[in-house]
Image (cartoon, rainbow, N blue to C red; front, side, top):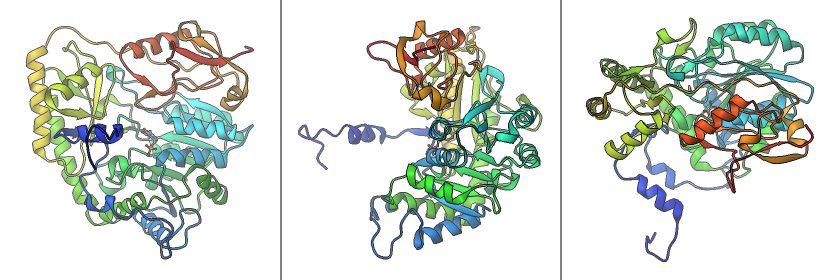
Length: 474
Ligand SMILES: Cc1ncc(COP(=O)(O)O)c(C=O)c1O
């Protein structure tokens, strides 16, 4: 395609700019599969090919093979990410008047499920570790929520691992869900690789989850946004309702390159998964060892977590004490001066990802950059993480709040109002405010601080000024 002045293709241009050589410590982990497949095979439901909804041919067979590899009773290929799987799971299994028990760290696609279904959430709180790094839900808090709501709960949703690789004690949580016959949904979007190496954390498949999702495009090398949804054999799930919902939230045109990548990923995992993750683990352990020898940088460690939680060793969350930088500033410095792209920045930390195919040479690039930064900038200054977002009182279900008449208020006048919208910093994409919740003054202050740090809020109205949609007659 011509790249001349007469052609204005902003997406192509932005992508081409990215193709300059860079060191990538972020998703997608595309190093494992051959690239020549993706440009070809963009076909449709031709004779001999299959339908995505109620498949009977090659897609059905590929899904069966995937279920076998992922130790599931059945598997669905998702062509709109784990997002559509989570939305469909909640939408199909929950109704108005029900309560979905869910971690406060749930992804915004789960919030979409709440709004579509009309179910009310009961949130399980999530604590923080060093440098304000979010941890995950505890069995003790989960049990309290289950005891409180089991009778009207069509599901318990746990996000494990979280964006920082912190895993809840899924085995214990599955046990207490089973005791009360509450189906367990696990958002394992970032943990599709766990099953394929014994040094990786316990996975949803072997912990007794009823339904779980894996974003194969995040850690397994499939094309974005290819993902899997798996059901345990005998899962407490209404499958025809689930399939109906999946057909409502996905395209009816099977994107064959994405489906093919899910099929190839399954084959690659079966044949090479263990070896590939073994070598990625070696690189990650080396990187962790080198980073923690520094006088400035530390990595989130198992010892920082409550007993029973686990940590994905391929995801390193770095934090520091003696640099004058926020995580956002350090992220920019690494990109601008060292051509290093990380997975995510927070106020006082960075998340980096090690994926199969990343050799020790790439790890060395990061180690050298961190050493140099340490020498150039070490000071006694310390960046403090902001106060965590609080869990606000909830006055109505998200759907009720969205259906009410709403008005716009400037952000700095929103305290005391009831939100009529979601508010989601990205990454990680977990809402910090749900429709139906009180906008606390602490929330307003924290949003303002995040905005000053340059965080992108996916649902913020920014023009002509920062505004929130709130329920009118409250
Ligand atoms: C915890 C979590 N769950 C679900 C999703 C959605 O995954 P996908 O991008 O495959 O739709 C994300 C996306 O980043 C996520 O972080």
